[in-house]
Image (cartoon, rainbow, N blue to C red):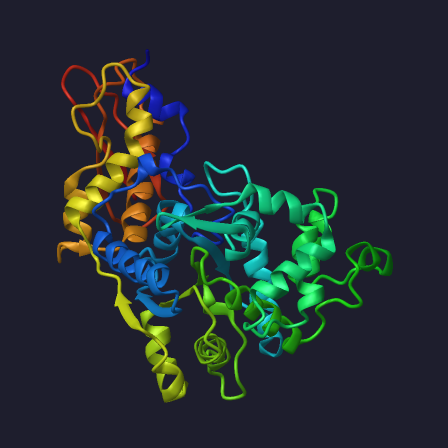
Length: 422
């Protein structure tokens, strides 16, 4: 095996493999082995508590997740999805381009997420949600379970399927019940499943495709999109919660006065509550300063619909060091012998000097690690020596004139490499 310095020379900077600005958590796979459990653990526990309440009483709830840029809000949402996907369905909803189409945007992103297949499952979230409806389950000794016989019987007969759901949810005020339940039936047909998903997302379908689905029109208005999304909540009494995660909202449309149009998002949230839609858990993730700039523009009645505001805390230097150790672990495992320090070639001193207050943010920690790792790699790549176990000591003197790099060879007694700007 190679020495740690040889490994560092040939391997990609492990911090380059880290997405410092995560987006849609369905497009990225978080590695549980590269996670520091203690970071934001209190927030995870608080969100789990609220999620459990939604599951228990089916009443929708909303949370405002606040934190500075780089505090780990987006990563936390991905971690929440990865951890709790077995007991909830997760939808990522990014920024919208036009506030006049907010409901169509939310519906599209929700269905896009529901058609994703969770880790460890064979079927999409959408099919798991459909099979968990009370119309297809029965109770035995206080335990609800999927009823295969009912499912198979109804799956083979579209009209019976629609009639059964209309009878089961006759008090739920379903919007366009025949069409909506008919499309849900089409989800059970592998050949029609893709088309049914496209219709639910609000895609413009051809006449031929609409005939296959037996629908007269597509979801082509805000009212239709709002009501189709509402249908999910109106029949979801016995299903797992759907977690709507609004994130990365820095680029939403602006109002004439230059402020961002967050009011339209809070209108959506209030509608979910005012219409008594069941089993939604809404998480609105915002940069703290963005919220402070816009809070006065949000109507009081809409702010009252937020169950709780949660502020992400800074992480300690111990947690920052652990974050480095997890990121460097794969590099260390390839070396023989392995370094004595789990954060080699980085040093605790770098953290203490960069963050004298003893607290920092995950993104800043990773950026510092990337920079210092690259500095070390550059130093050993430019050291002409066969002894790769002794890194050069680098000093810098700042003088005027053109810059020139002079790096001394490392022998039995360490030399000093000087970057002399003269």
